[in-house]
Length: 346
Image: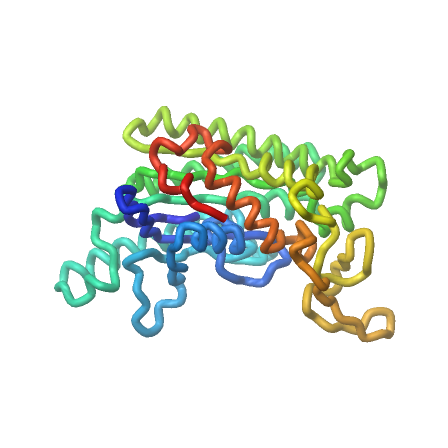
């Protein structure tokens, strides 16, 4: 979730409080944005010539939070974390951290002006942009322990948790919400390797059908929730962004966009067709079957849509960001409210 503090459209500037969120259950903790994959977040910030934001949990020294604060952690879920969760920072925890952050900021500012150059003023919280890209980990993790019907059944409860978090943020003054849906989970090499061994489980693109079906159901319900919230909070702006269509189009037409491999990982072990082995992650060296092996990167990552079997490559994220920033995958289109984004050149 990117909680943006202040958007100055007249000058094409975005001061945001970014809160990255999870990407995948097997990913180590790193910086993401209340659900936003780090590389896509990075591309968007680069495209808009904006600074990266300091993390809420990295406040040692004198970091500046005036332009933003990052709350999220990779591996997080919408639903509350359990003892088996990769990240303890589920969506509810991230929202609670934001509430604490805002209260502490206003408390410090009330004591004097000395910290004004480091902290956002109260109006930033209302004028800001709150970005969300979360839910993929809830679905991905569920496939390891639940039936397909059980996975579909958990979606409404996950979205109720998400809705509750949005309501808390609204009560805290948030008014501008940018909600990403989740991408084609079944097209990740990790899931193809684990759940796609039976050819009948794959679709025409080589993706795991059940994973993508569940993702579509999640996205439909998320879209409906976004519309519901817009109707409920008429003084707010809710923008739903169709990341799924952008990524699916890229995978289906990869050669058209200059890629050579739509699913196979650039960095991994095992070679074609997936170059992915769950026992060894990108860049690691490990003894497998009595032999020391290393999961190495390919020679040219720009030829690959997928980086490590779980995350998209920099080149793929560049494409995703360029499409996202056109506004045509948003509901409603944001060209009327964010015209400066449409002038960005890649």
